[in-house]
Amino acid sequence: MPADTLPPSEGRESLGATDTRHVRHSLGLLAALLALTVPLALGDVSTGANVRTVGNASLTLTVSAKANVFGAGLSVMPAAGGGGGTTPTAYALPAGARQLTFHGGSGYVTCCSGFTTPPKNGPEGGTPLTPGGTDIPAVGSISGVSMPKQMFLAGVFLGKGAPSGSPPSTDTPTRNPVLRQVFYVGGGPHWVNVPTGATRLFLGFADAYGFHGPAGWYEDNAGTVQIGLTVSTRAPTTVQVPARSLSLSLYIHRFWVAEKNLSSCSGPFGESALSCTVRHGALVSICNKDGYHHRPLSFNRHNRFGGPGKPLVLKPGQCFKKRFVNPTKEPMTVKIYDEIHSQERMMITVMPQPR
Image (tube, rainbow, N blue to C red; front, side, top):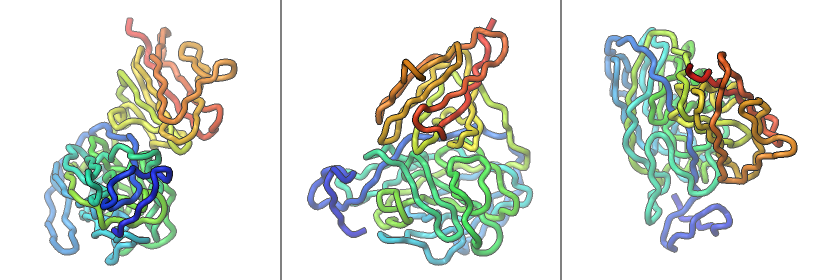
């Protein structure tokens, strides 16, 4: 990518004059419950157009940092500037595939190979250099991406032929993506359901200038990651495993759950439908990953915090921790809201205290 230098006040670190620059930042999120799997017969492997058939019980896939997830099904990679990268890694799905489990992520990628000390991260995404995350609009018929992370491994399902039609809505951290909807893969373990009509899976990265705005700026990406993939013909498992601790983040008017807690929560993740299950005495943390204040609250009599008279104000970067308890004999529902942002709401089920 061409050299571009911005002062720190515009979101960049102060590096040497010879450094190649562009804004990068990334926050923390997602992994999940391994589904029960049924091995499928290994299909034919095709080298054409970087397409292979996924059909055995467990396969390890390699994805380049330059793989442009928005180029799924296209011959020319879209880019608003800084290079369109390479075609995303594509895999033909076997008949009967109903669920994919991603696991065993490894390797490293960087968004900024021109830095003197390039930041690097695994497939789960990196630590932010500045507040932000990823917010990239739809490209053609492929949905946009919105996540409190950057440079994370992403996927998209397509049917037969080139992608067409209006792009679906952005709901990146979801277990139920629809066709042409970009979703979070990360490093696993977590599963997603295969949408009706899907015949191909594409894996790549979502990049843009500063990870905001039109897709592009793949030229200075470097490295590769590996991810294990298991194919299942069974229906997804929906049982939530009560967590001993729960890590939540507030970002772009949503609650987000950490990867380690995905088996204890249900989604689609990031939306108001987010709900999690914890044990009695579980330590719950809520961290503000935004650039503005949040005021979370709960009116539950046994797990009350914030609200009128005793507001809980979380400044950017601050966290709040509380042990959630349930002295009753039945599971208890704790609803969490925000005094400032009405969209922010979620539900935590606290299991009874063991007797």
